[in-house]
Image (cartoon, rainbow, N blue to C red; front, top):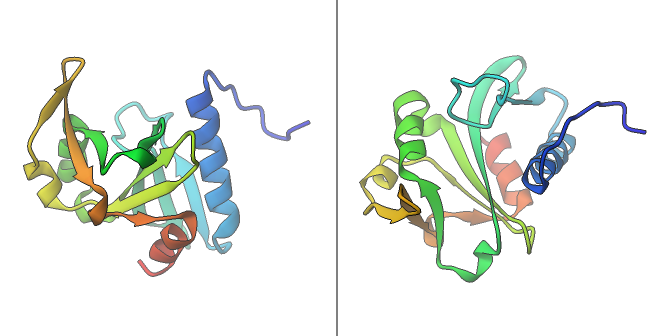
Length: 146
């Protein structure tokens, strides 16, 4: 029996909980990862603290089999909100559901200048994987070296 009573609604939420608990377990004690989903006005999924001070923000995108494409998709509005509120203090992470591969990049203003495409009526942008690092180990290294 888990000591946490977490109400999960779908597989994506379960994957997010698994991601954050895995990341937290691999970071030193002075780092804390806090989910922001209780704050409906927050534009990112997690705040990462070091010694009780905000270190950075993390946006997690869970996708199907994104490993077979050369780019990673994110909503244009999401990028605009990250630029407005968090700028270069945000890491964007894509977690592939099928392969469990983790891609991540530090937010950069050039992402907002990318061509906008539309998917189901919503504006999206495609970030090329050349801008991304791959794997949980490198993500952890990037957080520790922030």
